[in-house]
Image (cartoon, rainbow, N blue to C red; front, side, top):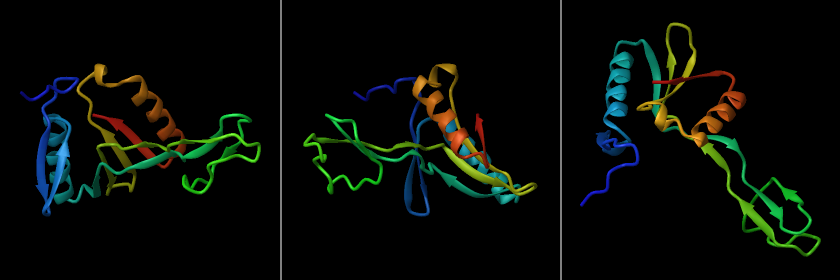
Length: 143
């Protein structure tokens, strides 16, 4: 038996240029179709699906002295100068559902399709704030 998604959404799959693209909900797939129509009518351009943005880079932190190495190659440093172990902390990224440019004014828009306030988790709210702070040239919309 298939497990239901956490918020009851039905996942959808669409093949685009021989590549299988997964959408988290029917609403997200519907929005994709709307955006493709806008792109065909030249109202938007450069439509991208699930583009990943870096919010905070990965880093290593010493478990004894707290020293931090932000320029991380996780395989390069395993021990701190103090003798402590360097603990790897992975990067924080955010992946909006869609990113596109509005042709009328050139504004770049990132959209996230949400089913309601229940799907706006605390993690989503924090990442949204980090995204808006770091990428001030991109307008963020919840659909």
